[in-house]
Length: 448
Ligand code: NAD
Image 1 (cartoon, rainbow, N blue to C red):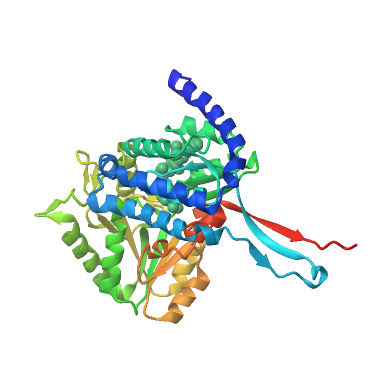
Image 2 (cartoon, protein in one colour):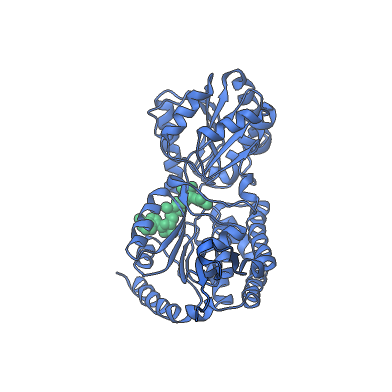
């Protein structure tokens, strides 16, 4: 263990002991006190905006628009919590059954206690602060670990957290896997983890040692079903555009498209035209709008899927170029991908869209039912019966019909995965409840 790690480990124990004592004070905080903390957080984020945008550019080449999206998502959640936390905290009166006619029953929302929060690198700012908002709103303490693959954003997050909170309430540690493992040894109450299914299993196993509850926001391969009745021009443009968002490094990106065979040619033509129009200037990839793959390891990983699929017989319909100097992979469209290609079983997390055709939708159901349940499923159709049939024959964390990703943005809906793509949910009141223990209270009547 080097000196730096040693210091971090000692500080981890100190912080955990401080939070263990302080959590009872924090969990008793009033709605007004929690609102005050959220307001301080909002003001700090605002004051660090320029630094946050620079960090996002350095880590992922996010442009002004992409960085603003990350910031706006956080402001939106803070504002929502400020407006609603008083209501969320109110106990829910429960009608008693015949046996307890004279008793009073209620549900109260108590804090979980100390929450360990791991952020992901693809939206490195949003995916720390979006979960932190309900952690604060529900009256928890937290230990935050931003993602080490986005070190510039990690540093700004650390500055903001340290500016706004005492470490006995919200502490932040920067580091990688060694630190993650050290933090997972702590007998914390809840882990909120955003990352890969493989590490999600490690996190859940570690949490099980202390019977800590978990929220696992994981990934997977999100399928899209395009029905004959769909507006193909609209569907193909939306799917292609959102597959390329953040260079395909989005847990909700559409990945495998199943399009009715009658519509395949039109679909591919529109998808290609979308990429030509939105990603290139004078025939060159426009790096002002096309961010970078986060690091060399991930560049090689995504290139590996491409090379493997093509070597096994997949057809390259568009793109496929890899540019090491700008750490870019061009938006890419594949067809005829064989079943034994690695891209068929692993999440790509890069800008490759694989297109498959079907004659009979039951072929698609059979294939999807054999795969891990994805984080999202998208269906494009003008026929409501078709949509209901898709819902009845598939499973996923969430669904958007006639678009991609949008269910994530509707904050009245819970966001999360199912089995292989995650456990638990958040956003709005769902996040508040996820970070609370819903405690059952029965108040019996005196009988003498
Ligand atoms: P990752 O699982 O590799 O890393 C996430 C965190 O786990 C990091 O903090 C890292 O330090 C830690 N970690 C890594 N290896 C570890 C180990 N062996 N033991 C203990 N801790 C370890 O994930 P990633 O590559 O940073 O992110 C990409 C994944 O995240 C994709 O699968 C993507 O779909 C998913 N994701 C999900 C959401 C969502 O909201 N559901 C959002 C963004 C990303």
